[in-house]
Amino acid sequence: MQAILILAHKNIDQVTRLATTLNNNFEVYIHFDKKMNIPENYKQILDKKNIHYMSKIDVHWGSWSIGAATVLLMKEALKNRQIEYIHVISGQDWLTDTSQNIYDRFKNDDKIYMTYFKATEVKKAGEPIIWWQKYYFNYDRINRRSTFGKFYHRGLLLIQTLFRVNKLKKLGIDLEIYSGENWVDIPRDAVEYCISYLDSHPNLLKMLQTGCFSDEFWMQTILCNSPKFKQRIVKNHHRYIKWQKQHGSYPAILDMSDFSNISKGDYIFARKFDSTYSSELISNLNNTHKNND
Image 1: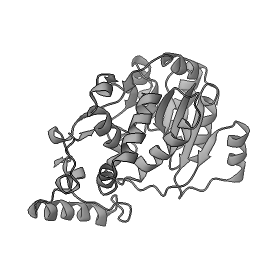
Image 2 (image 1 turned 90 degrees about the vertical axis):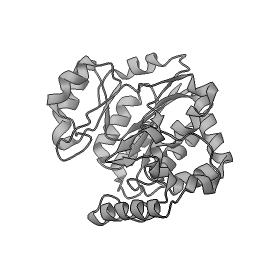
Image 3 (image 1 turned 90 degrees about the horizontal axis):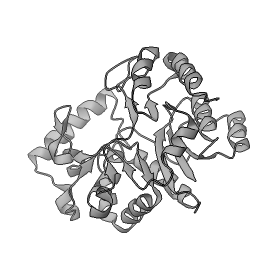
Image 4 (image 1 turned 180 degrees about the vertical axis):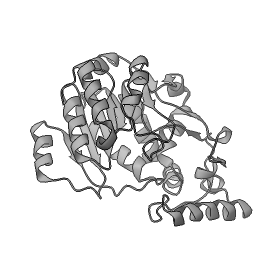
């Protein structure tokens, strides 16, 4: 048995369609951002399909809350001893193959499909991303996406660089810090190891809780520092993500112009989809792969 974990923060109708499509083959677990309103009729649809859902964490972009919601879903899925493999996707994902084919692809697979790289070797927006864990941030309280939040972020970086802040040293963390995307396909034993490691290393949890974009660091750092698990990682999560700005979003909100590239690639999911721009693309993907939502 395999589980799909969905992190959702908008578009209740689209998320419900995604969940019911996947529910044909997978146990589905959804975390809805606490700020979302979930109408009763959608709850009834999810309940009728035996789809698990919760809404416990107020999710903020750039903060650990996204990672915390992932951990919560993983712990819930692990309660089912029959689940042997777990996939983490967003509520703005859609299938690029049949649900059955995706399920079959991971039968008896012990590989971890996950992107990763050393945080000390990468810069984003001109910032060494190791700073995002080396310094202190509080984006559960400050809106990182606001104009104020952008200036606030630059100020935090400047001040902490000047004062040579090193949270990693203070917390006694001697791990190599790795980063990558939160979207993974991962066997049960690797999930159990991640959860167990996090629960038994409060210093690492403190690093993540006071870091920036920590959902992109926790699994990579834990697994890549384990020789046993690192050798099982395949650096390909088979997601189609267009790293360009489109329809006011980066990464891009996809539309029919992306259909050809999605169809030609070795993908199982794509993101981001939004009903305003992506309805025709979703319909064409469904018709191509006979996914009925």
